[in-house]
Image 1 (cartoon, rainbow, N blue to C red):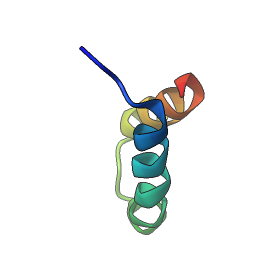
Image 2: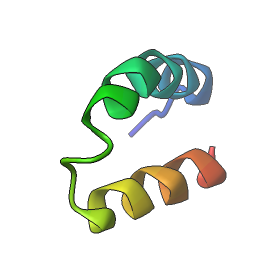
Image 3: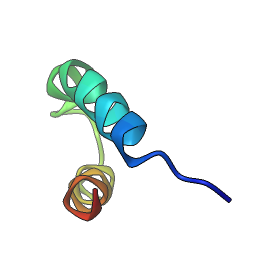
Image 4: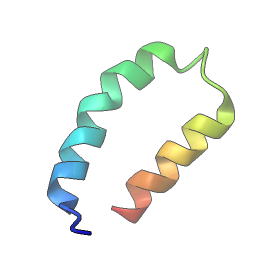
Amino acid sequence: MNLNVEEWRREVISQDELFIKLYGQLPKEIILQRELLVSRL
């Protein structure tokens, strides 16, 4: 399985606006999982 890290980075960055809009409504676990994903990239 191939993983294009740069493509994942672009995807995560493009999700920033959505996460900012939904931040108050999202479970803390989702925020944490996203932060962990970003840190692994």
